[in-house]
Length: 154
Image 1 (cartoon, one colour):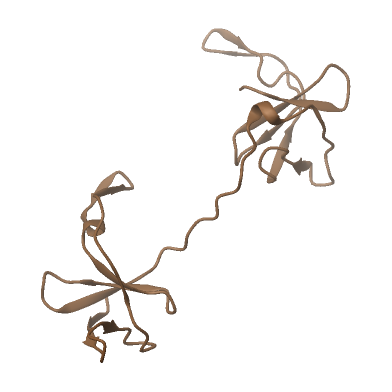
Image 2: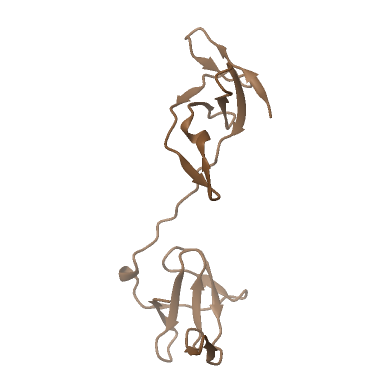
């Protein structure tokens, strides 16, 4: 835990103690739940330094600030709607995977297996060869005896 006293610059704003650049003020937001627990720290205002990738939050109104790393924004890929995916010819590559037509990530090939009994009922999900994408949860099943695959519900 690094505790720092932020210093006002000539413009009457706080500057970063590491790089001396102006800190950006961010108001506190709504309460959030992280890993199943309520996180009240998101309700507190903070000062962010985009150059250093850190932010500062005041400790109990003391005038001293604790330093935390800024969370990197997650890149969200564009996922194509299932109705817009035409039957596609999919082929396994050397690693047994191929590119998902919906999200562009690598999906796994699942070979057909015998029918299994699950909870007293036959499970027909893995009887035929198909591709499964772990990123967008898509399943592509073979059309008849062709090399073409169509998006399918699980």
